[in-house]
Length: 107
Picture 1 (tube, rainbow, N blue to C red):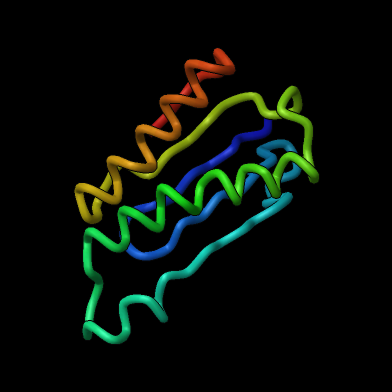
Picture 2: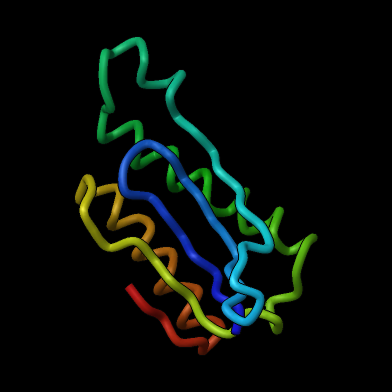
């Protein structure tokens, strides 16, 4: 089985494809926000949330060039621990993909 996983618990937006039969990641992509937050001395939740909103469509679009959606069997999303607003963006995005694809969603 192949799982599309989404991660947004703090200041990095990430997606990965895990192949459970091969027991390996087929693809991992991360958009980091370190430079945006460094001027503030720590993570600014509002900036992190905005960047997750912008980041997931970019990462998913990049994955589409690597793997067909029909090859994904299920979706996985980080649901804790982390910043609530950031987690909420990842969960909402995963729920949207679940609704659109009909594929199972796991936290």
